[in-house]
Image (cartoon, rainbow, N blue to C red; front, side, top):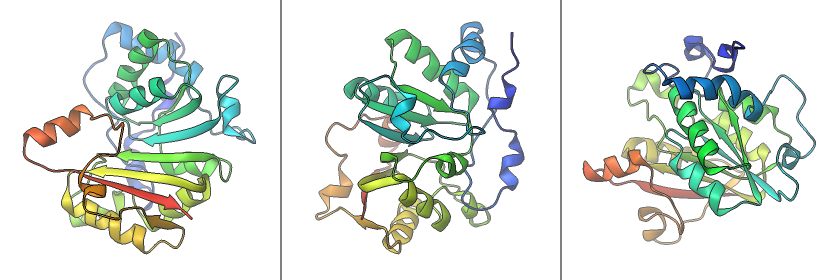
Length: 240
């Protein structure tokens, strides 16, 4: 079998500057079929950012794809899979450095016969830098690691540099959507996004951020947070 370990960056990524994507790479031993999917299916779906990007990201997907969206840190893949099924004419790119999460979504892609998902097992900041300008209709960041300790705040995805990278990658009126059950990270995100000249917060009333948007698929992590009494905030920001 080919060695695809290069698709998953090492833990040296934690030494990268602010704006990089930080997450877990290691987990429990893969089941035999999951390991097979990593070896055989992932190379067919994985983006190679060492090569120049296409002029239009829709070229990465089947004919008839109209727009492309990105989900950063898809975890178990519940939200990404539901969106890909609901919008077959949209191409979805899922970014996840955690090998077990990648294996799980590969199993579901295979089982459901989905053809409109592409995957990237690495740094979301590098992926955004690789993409052509104005190439994404939407970016989702759902229940990211909040890095609660002050010395780790530089590892949070939402930083000035990544906000600028998202603004570059989004089409005019495209959206960045953020879901979080940690109040401190929600406040952090609001502060940074409201100081970003390229975005406006779409909330007009409290329910616009207290309740999920129409059609939102709850993740397993989100359901666990609810059971444990943590309320999530649902933030939508539009690219001006």
